[in-house]
Length: 294
Image 1 (cartoon, rainbow, N blue to C red):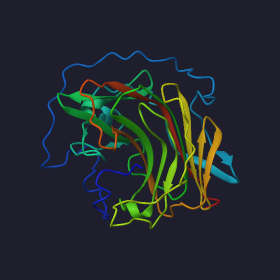
Image 2: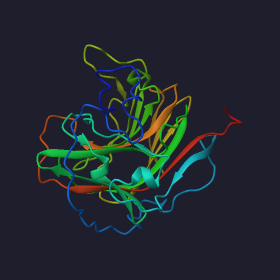
Image 3: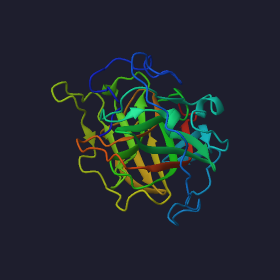
Image 4: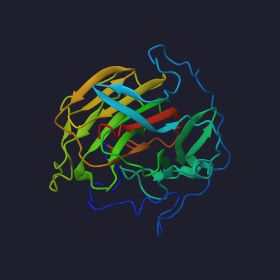
């Protein structure tokens, strides 16, 4: 199960460490990788099952809740490596620290760019060091109860994974965590939500539901739309507009923020030094509940 880096060891806020565009002092940097690799984009029409090809706009209603967007990011402005926060100043990123597994190093200036209306995570190694990145598309804006949709695809890249997380604004993992989509870039994806208050210091782990989550097979190489809908009564997970899981037993109650993490796999397998590929995000839309219902 996914969690933010350091969450197993730190229950207090981590925002001071994850400041917008700031490299953490005392952590060695990485040599700049010269040049960039050309990317051949699959058609944006993608697989026929990804019905929401265009970014949705405006408010919507679902399961009796009216949702209004607070983020609608179509990545329509190009940003070269190292320019993301200059072009998109309301976003945030992690830089200079280890990822969840400890194998990767957050290096957004060498990994993240925007081109052809997609956010591009170019995952690869510099020598023996895997380079990874996390982007907060709405910065540290956070709400209790949200609906978040992402249209994305990913190459098959051994040793790496991708996850969209709803993570507590406080940084306290014990408040819960919602992961969807999540999967190694050579495998399937599945949705989970952590039970608030279930952190066990002995195992340094949370309890996630469903215990046996639905697995979407076939990898992530086609375009798909993944949606999380978090209300007071349940967390719902959709894949290409089809309801995949409803989880009433692991519902966070505190504000959370949207986090896109392209990292190394969290088990002990080594990351192949020659592994290289891209996670492409077409758009992200995040909604809060209508104030009339809050």
